[in-house]
Length: 314
Image (cartoon, rainbow, N blue to C red; front, side, top):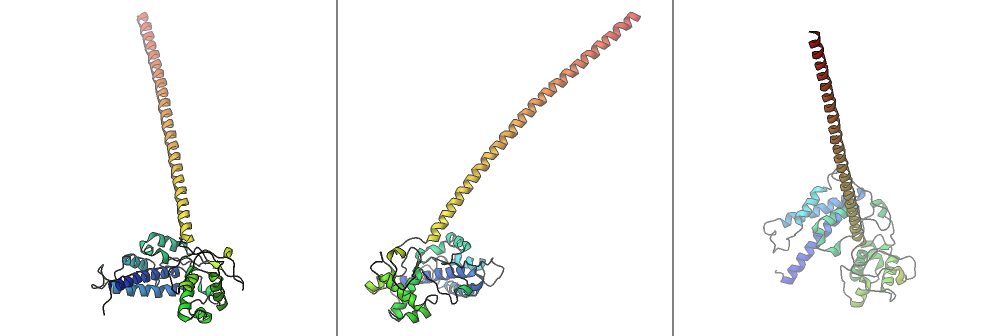
């Protein structure tokens, strides 16, 4: 069968997104000791995709399997080999809520263009250690979890909380899912969000960005003051990363200016010392020459005196 032009473009778009998500999950699990086995699975999936994409009939720019960031992905898999226990320093993620994306992963994401084809797919938060996440109920909902909730409602039914919890959101309880839908569907919830949009239109819009994670704390629907307004905004960690980098650059610039200032002071001090040394040397040389001349004069006078006495004696 043949794909239409629009279908081909849609499939190509999905392949790119799939590749980016695989890389992000590889990195988010690679540096956490309890999740390294998941990074191995992600790397195997990436290697299989790379192998298929590099086949002669698939590598042309017109193919749906042409991935612009393929070389960067191969470089990352090689550099942070999940099968090599000494390849990277493992970091234990914070057990706080929500878990932070490791600094090293932030640096990688901000340095490689492959992650910026689809900024909407960039991770909002990190992964909790396995021993922390197993059996633990999280009270925070990320935008991605809201999207999973919408997918579950569309696929399993708008009130199938138990099956949605088991298959899509195991860190939540069925009651939390029910309250989350109630909260985001409330007329007091300002702005749009994935749940409200789905209930209003019957359609799923993913990705659907929101500011931050929000908290469902009681059996009553929370007010709009306690829930974030959904909008297309940059993730907080990206803003923080840029702010820290800007502060670091300013600090380095001030340090550099200080070093230049100190170097100028040192150079001037050396020049002053050299000048004073030369002036002192000149004074010493003049004094030595005067002493030599004085001695020579005295010796001449003594010679003349001896010659005069000698003539008188004759």
